[in-house]
Image 1: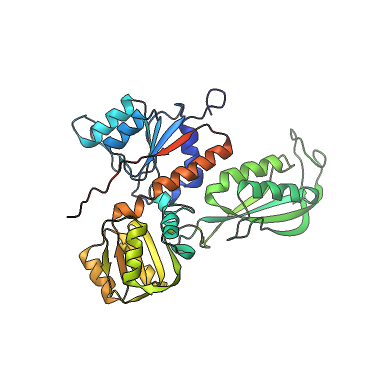
Image 2: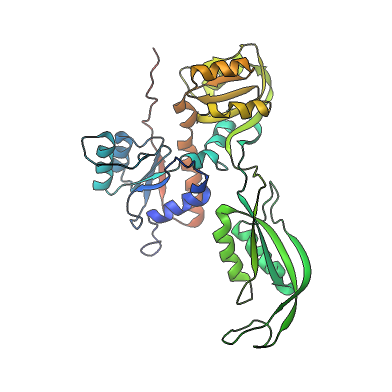
Length: 375
């Protein structure tokens, strides 16, 4: 942090990275700080769906130092930045007014308490879980600790974010044994004497660590462990996480027809119109959702027994494919399935900065509209 605790752009980006890790983003995506000085102080930030000239001007007019958007302004390397191009005009405005542009895109889609969780909850789904999960996102940390320090080290690991298994926390496994070491010259051993082999009663402490918490967990470990040189192992796991992934799937409180749920979806998403694939009388109970463009998840929705997929940007041949396989589709549009990220992200970020003592105020843009119109 900068200047007597005043938060700066890098603090804001660091916070976003902790709750919506960039590694969750697609390889083609471009998330994080796109424009701005990481050391610039920040007191106000505007949250919007798109980094348009209007939202940039709104942020500047509101006295904001940062604009946080879902969709990136810069997707591909730029060959030139000139004010007579769309992207150039936006970049000129942001840079000249010292406005940072920060993006949370597909990392927000996949993360826990992210866009797809918000969409699923808005539609009233229960027992929500990720639709497409990712393997290899967990590590097992094994550390060897003197018996008398076992609980202190375990508590430090839990505080760093280790030991979470589903809805259970502070999970660990411990076995006892004897460790040996011989301190070399120039060391300051916690136990034993230089040049003499030492035998110590230790425990082998094992915990699960999500990759996004690894750096913090290791920091807590090294602070709490009494040894000068800490012996630990990091083992990659192929387990899937049930709190991260693309899309969500859940159940309605009770069965209803596709026509009924279509009307309800239109109302809840405040969409002027929706498109349906399937029979209006078709019975719906298990529902998959994916904000934005989620047709690629049709196969996974079918595999998991979904009656319906709610998404946007459905193409003709995708609709035919869903129809032939008995999967109902509600296409509520890209904008209306994603616009909910604005108000929800403002609430989440305000809660997080208040908890950390950062004096940043987040506001949501109120002027964004779907570029498509119905007649």
